[in-house]
Length: 488
Image: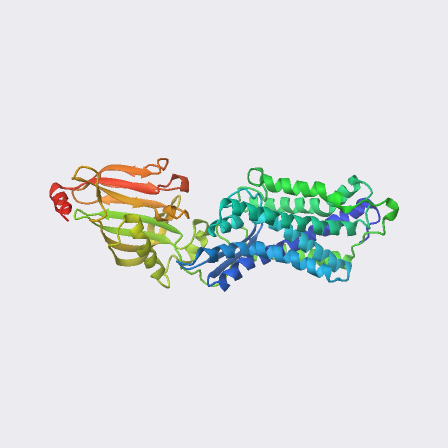
């Protein structure tokens, strides 16, 4: 196919670039996600699932309980580091003097797109948003100060921006041999045909696919992506200045795309577009992505607690747990009907966190079992949990509130105290003649109980801001028991 005039040449260029950006972009997403998973495997973790869909990519990794936070942080950073290394490798290949226009075309495009994905897709932009996406969360897990996090992200954004501007400046300077580049307007037309139109077109198509698959929004939304939109607009506006001015008589030839070449790009793009829904799926609730074996149950990501206090100041605690985050419910659906391969992670979780929750180390495991019908709360009610039951002696941890018949149980949300989450559901019941006489929470802005009665109090936490760090439940004991416990 030959572009004999400028208009036809722009159309042919836009078609080729749309196919190339789609192919190279999804290849880079695959490298990014595999970098997360392979790094997790190298550090002793698990990589059970990979998905590439219309929204981008998703790799799920898991580490056993007690794994140092730096390992999880390094896995989160691995994707962005891979994008950086791809751009650096592309620079090295170009510096080595790669021959052939088409090879140089693909290498330059790969380096530029990898830098673009680094800046707008990994959480670097904007640098001042804390804990944003994978890079922001990783830097938080490393314990860096807010200032250090901002400085690192700003430097990384600058590096990524230099990759984008440098690669695409070189790319368009080569294209300027075939297209008028004397004026800013002509250079802007070239950038629009070769980059802006393909990127916008792909985003529109993928957004339609996402909305058809039940997503609530497209690839980019104004509310969440304004800094990214501004960055893309700046690239669109500034790139023509970097191409350089050429007089019309300097134009060196006719832009050509051979039929075999165009057919090859089309076949690769169509093959991936056809295979992607079947291999990975576009439904994130029930995806058909690639599972690497059965999902391992090596951590606790959601927890409900039920506490029943007896008149003798002992209690039975039921910890209902799930190993996967709520957004990964499809993993839970694959394992909830069978017993876990090893209960030690659930038992260790209970023994490690109950002393923090209740202020006593006098705890003893009573048993564990899988219950696929147990009510479980993670923002809404569902069924199924791993259950560990523990017997606790509260006699030394209960506090008097000033009058002997009334004692106070202090509950500490061990996850919120460590700033990594919150307990989804907490219920305290009192048995026998005991009655609940008062409830309080800290901080003061935390949500009040969703249920309170004479013998039960219940919190249903739906977000971190509404959860309590410390909860206090006062209850009344029979006078004889109060006197007995007071003598201890």
